[in-house]
Length: 295
Image 1 (cartoon, one colour):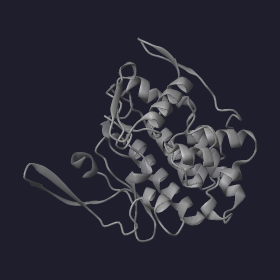
Image 2 (spheres, rainbow, N blue to C red):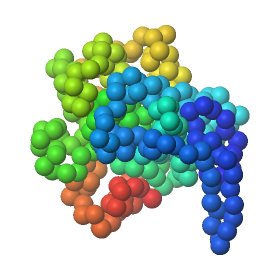
Image 3 (cartoon, one colour):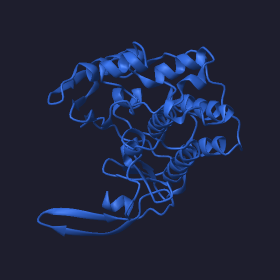
């Protein structure tokens, strides 16, 4: 994390101020973020984030990822894009942080396969199967954040009572929003705490961007540079299928439906206890249920 973040300079990335090595630990010092993390602002604040703040936050994170993917000397794959890793300064500008899982890759080089790492609900299905992180796996994670910010709901809802009340029988946020998109009810997905105080055209546009980024096929996802252009109106949003696509993803050892993989992961998340841990050997991941983090 120190070696990567120390070389990065962007207005929407946390800025490293210093570090020290003490008692066998490396301590990193960053700028103070008075408004905490995005997940705290979404779920724990007494005051809901206004629509304009949400748009600004999503654009800031998109700009940061576009910089990491295409504008650095070496490409940086973050691998853990999620709301708790997005900090907010005094003006609610987004600052992407926590580069503990990040990897640097030379441009035009293929990434090596590793054990999948990250947080359930934000992980691209092909990454779960192969352990190979690319810029498109970050794009998928960003898409989950977009839908989370627009709806005020977590990517995978584990609380069954909340699940039944808010998202029917489907705990997966991407699938739920895609269903509303198919029915032409995108505005129904908006966070109720917004109390309708948003532009429906803007909501639709950003929601479609989120769905495009969440496409099961990595080749169908936009680049983060294109996402920035779409958010600021310099590019048209893509034609997203009305029904969420399914596809098969093949490796040397298995042939699985990405839809089945996501459903399996959702079931694991819902059936877990807070203290248990389990493994999914065929996916080459281990899931710790204390925070749904993969290691």
